[in-house]
Amino acid sequence: MEQVLADADGCSALLEEYGSPVNLLDLAALRRNAEELAEAARRHGVDLLIQVARKANKALAVVDAARELGLGIDVGGQDELLQVLGRGVDPRRVVLTAAVKPISLLRLCLEHDVLCALDNLDEAEELSGLARQQGVRARVALRIAPDPDSGLPPSRFGLLAEQWLQWLAGAPAVEVEGIHFHLHGYAALDRVTMLGRALVLVDELRARGHHPSNIDIGGGVPMSYLDDGQQWQDFWTAHHAALETGQPITWRGHPLSNVYPYHQAPVRGVWLDEVLGAGLLGGSVAEQLRGRGLQLRCEPGRAMLDGCGMTLARVVMRKQTSDGLDLVGLEMNRTQCRSTSDDFMVDPLLARPGTAGAPSDPVEAWLVGAYCIEAELILQRRIAFPDGVAVGDVIALPNTGGYLMHILESASHQMPLARNLVRGTDGGFRLDAIDLGGT
Ligand SMILES: *Cc1c(COP(=O)(O)O)cnc(C)c1O
Image (cartoon, rainbow, N blue to C red; front, side):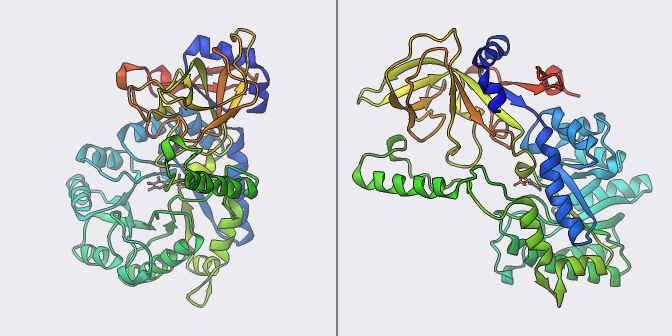
């Protein structure tokens, strides 16, 4: 990202050619991110299959990079599934976890013999019925929800283990290959609690003649956007103090009550190490998995895309609100750098190309976007521009590869979605295949 930004004219040229904003991708960091998890599993003698969560970034470069590293993919819908198969990912390394599965999707899953993580009895019955018609057995994982007495928050996803056992008693046309869960949040201990329930379910299933061979702990592997925890602490101190004085540093005093932990520890390998080393059922998690000959699977999205993407946008105007707040207008909208978090908390960077106009004096301003809404903020935080800001400046939002680019992007006002460019080995950027018509 620093290399790209060092060439401000090159950044500006990308915006000229492909429009603003533009998403840049370089999947080199995927290897490092995946290797951290793989190494932790090796240390514990646990067989691990990483399945990158496709929904975290739509670029097909992600699928290609994952396939080349021998990773699997977690897909959440029909197009995601077809694209992944079209790119040559081994169907044995694909898992369908779509929250809602229409019959056409279940049919596809069966046709390609892809593992289906079952969420509810309606889709389970539908899939079993289709399999029976075709004289085959569907490959399934049972998605389990936390037991009410587990201490974990309730979930809309999955069913209680007990409900799955009851359903299986009716001898559906499925092969239970695994147990699956995906939890809200990032706590290692919550995964340990659910692993405990999944292990017991494996034993119960085996006693009934089933042959589950893996447990999938879903996503939520944590990552940290900031290296420096002090910056994170300092921000909150300043934010809360500013709210109290009535001079907020967020837009109209936005509280930022729901944000991703942009600094956290442990992450990735150390976090998985904590999960596998935790005590459970009279041994460690790793011992319990090894002892039953179970493969561990996971579906990390965000943590795998750490360091893989950056969004660039052009400054088109500067002005003040009617009450004197400074604004910097970007040629983009807020859905183009947005997740379920209230704000993207990484500071933007400024690159000034030769073509930029005359810069303003140093200023502190809010970045606003193109949608016709008062609160159309790219970032909720007031941003300092120590070198002023000019029309034609390039604003970079770093590390947006996981979710920020795509999960909520919209083409409202009929403004086109951002193009996605992938960095080649020669350092140049080319359109990702997703922008060239799909597969
Ligand atoms: C979203 C999701 C993931 C990925 O979650 P991350 O927090 O990006 O790791 C994995 N599995 C399922 C079922 C999901 O819904």
